[in-house]
Length: 177
Image 1 (tube, rainbow, N blue to C red):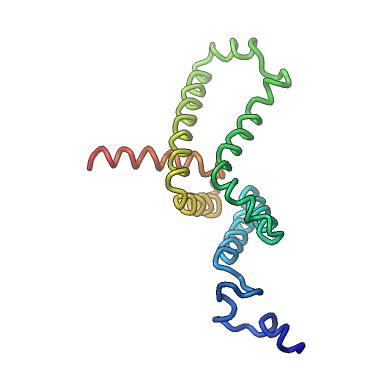
Image 2 (image 1 turned 180 degrees about the horizontal axis):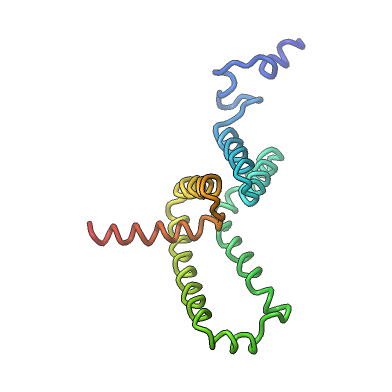
């Protein structure tokens, strides 16, 4: 009886291990997330590591069946809302006010920053569209971000801007087809 109950746990059979529906199965998605977790830890990408930790927590507490569909459809908008809140905090705390805005308007650096902010927001808008209509692009964007962070000391700014740039390039390519 003991041997039958714990056979799948202690005996590592490839067919049994990946067989769908097995009680002690490690799915392809779990393995994929685990590999991404290791890469995130090596690359010291805190956002990726925390995100995967949350996904594992949801998955292994069986809340994933209820939460994953919601996150898949509304997650990007929730993330954008959190980022927007973070950007507006200096205004809410009084660190940035009309005086600082007026002083900044006198500098051409501020105008460059303003134009950059507009460009990034427009790129991100295209990124939201792309990630919503073509979610498998996220994997390539995450790998691209990890490569840039790990190999080139890049900064992980998230998949939205990357998706926006990809969307802009794809749109340009479509114009020439």
